[in-house]
Image 1 (cartoon, rainbow, N blue to C red):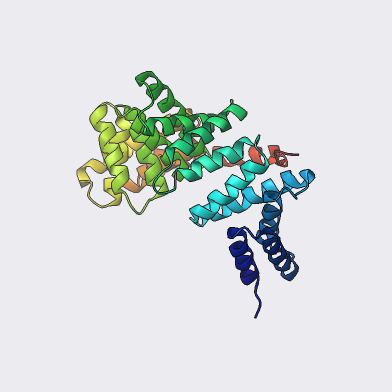
Image 2 (image 1 turned 60 degrees about the horizontal axis):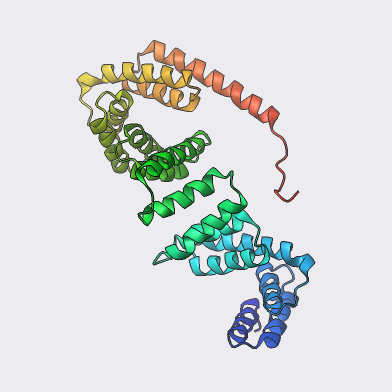
Length: 319
């Protein structure tokens, strides 16, 4: 039985042998067999492009499709295929900053990492999008991995990574927040606040694996014994594991309640709610904490309503 995969594999094998006309024929057969297959269409277009037969008017469309397939392959952890698609997107649209950036980011996931390719990708992306903090941080992080950052640059880019982590934290993207906080601690190992925030992100992203968060909190404590929130968060982990001494429950319930107030004043409503709930868990008779939780939940509800009303349709960058 003839299948889509068979035609695509035959086309690819012929392409590898330099038999482009035959390869294009098989890709076209794949398209005829399944007109809805993006992969078949893209492989056909890429073969035409390699032979300078793809109309210039179609380059943007197929660069976008290659980019999309690259993202899909990356999500599936098929790094070699993702790299092929991203490279094709860059070739078709050399002035597309995000394509250069994603190519560099994906190259970082290859084994071994080809730093001599990664850094130029980020440099090109930054030249095309000089205001992008994400690209700027990625370039700095790559240079740091190669020992190319000065002490002054390390401090500067620790701050940039920390800011990006905070943005992801505010959006609830805890895995990404943890990744940026971790990079901030690599650049500035003595930054207690960054270690604390790393612990918080790890605890949120992986609630069933508290060990990494505990280490981050302990590091923050060691660097700054006066950082009360690190001590409180570590106690909360111990409470969750049933190892916090009973005589300390009332103390940490009060401290969570106070930290909840601080978070609320800073506009961090979800963290405030988390600390109020922790205070109640430690002391179920804590009436003031219940009142604070009710007010914070009401405030959060009002914020969510305002955000929902203010939302507008999101346009594609090319629109």
